[in-house]
Image (cartoon, rainbow, N blue to C red; front, top):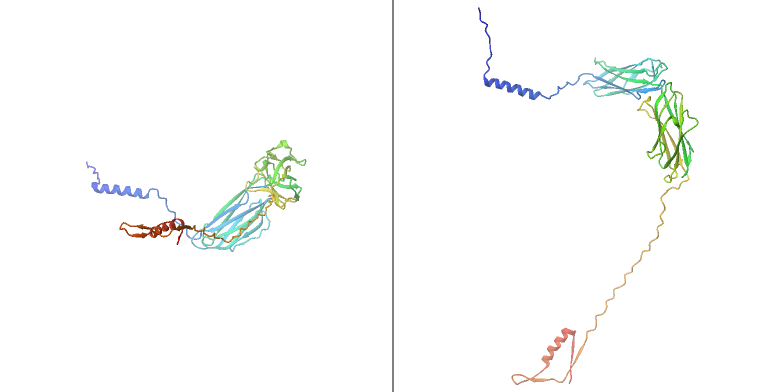
Length: 383
């Protein structure tokens, strides 16, 4: 009976430790690294497509913008962009930049529109625009998709992008009027009338009307006209408050219905002659595109108001005193007092040695002292 042999690899301790350390270093050096994607080479096209609305009623026009960019490393030649319209879209117009040529819109639903024969350098973008109309075949609640695809001679796989529009036959419109509609003076009133219609084939839900309170005016009243299909009890209105606008909301507008509301303002003293009083009203609904403003603006001119409301200040002329310099008069010095001393005939005295000397020397000393004190001594000798 043969014995089975088992083989084992014996790794010296030092070599085994070295292998373990190398494995640890390899794991540490690669941890957290993101694999670097190699740059795409050749002619590579990228397509982006958007539209100006996401919700639209039947019969409205949609503007599609298509951008085709060469993100590769070589020039793309004979670039072609194809846009196959669905049956609910009619081509109205097309435009393009670069050197694309395009098919003319023939107005047939479901037309294939192509832009072709363009050359795009590296990082260059071709911009294409198409306006299409939602035809009569579109139904409320339907989603209409539109796709644009690009290709080139270099065998690029190309790219494509789509944009969806939801058909909603809530079709709101708004208009404004003012009384007076031309000019108003200080203290005068302006009555703004806002009319909102649902011209579509479906109801408009959660309709909101907002109207700004113009500057230099005070809101004094809000109401509803007799031409409105809704009464004041059919909606909420915040009235004249300090928010700077009046809002009517909380109502639905059936297809074919109209709401007509009013706001009255009074021109304040802040307005000046020649000013424009601008007022804007807008309407929205849950069934309309939130990115599309439905607004109307009215302008009324201010007249008969002083050019300025700042009181004119009367300036009293100031009298400036003129100071005339007079010549400086130097006062004469006070007279020097004169001390007159009358001296008798020379007085003689007997000195220690028995000689006889006049007293003049002594008086001379006294005169000198008087000269210092009084400014002068006049000595007169009597003969």
